[in-house]
Image 1 (tube, rainbow, N blue to C red):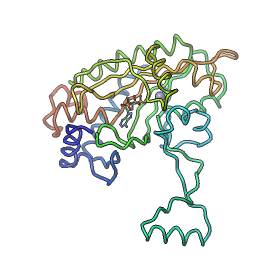
Image 2: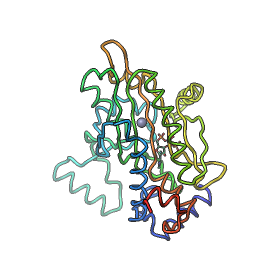
Image 3: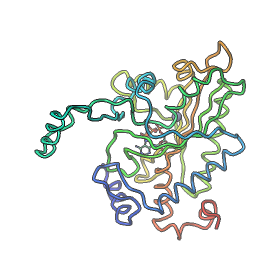
Length: 304
Ligand code: ATP
Ligand code: ZN
């Protein structure tokens, strides 16, 4: 925790832009905050319009079976959120109520349901596309937007437990997906610069768990598989990743049997926009009152 993180969070709460819900990283959003997120989403859609991506919206939960197959628990067990529910009898119900009333742990009898909270907007997509069969020769391009969950409670307003990720996902040959990623690296930077915020592009890695994870992180960096567009939100020295550009090679293609012709495994890449982080970056750089934001920024977002 840094004092600047706590200070910015306090400001956001005092101005009613975020609303305290009693848990670090879980907030209500004001109408103004939501308006910024929506306007930004429309702006992104404008940048991507000519690509004619297929729009798909998933709920913020995915199949536990598919989540298990995705391998998420191997890489990021610390971040996952699983949905559990009561499925006991009258007697167990009475115990549960008694435990709650006594302030004791009541969650012992909770059983895992078939639903897991979506960790990244693209996770539910791959099995759905695999089920369709062989992809057309030109591959596929998808437009996703979902609330995601990651168990990383923090006082940093830019590190939430529930937040939205807007993603474009490309499935195809290595050339197709790398072209896609390159085009969004350029567009993403141009898009954020046009909104008047300072940006830095850098190589990054995912927070792979444990000792084996260190190797995976190093490998990801060495091969430049992940880039992030960083914008200072609560610190100049440690700017926040607001957009991510990921090349998964054939990782998901192999896992899910994605292919563009019978015996060639498809490669995949995704670009992810952290919607809350982008909104927070705009509030940080242009002020908490959106009516006083610079004219060019207002024009881009609200058309005025
Ligand atoms: P970080 O390195 O900061 O943990 P990440 O690189 O793991 O983020 P990705 O997995 O690439 O993030 O997720 C895509 C986008 O979702 C990120 O670029 C970021 O903008 C956003 N994001 C990720 N985690 C959070 C979070 N806890 N709160 C808000 N936005 C997030
Ligand atoms: Zn993704």
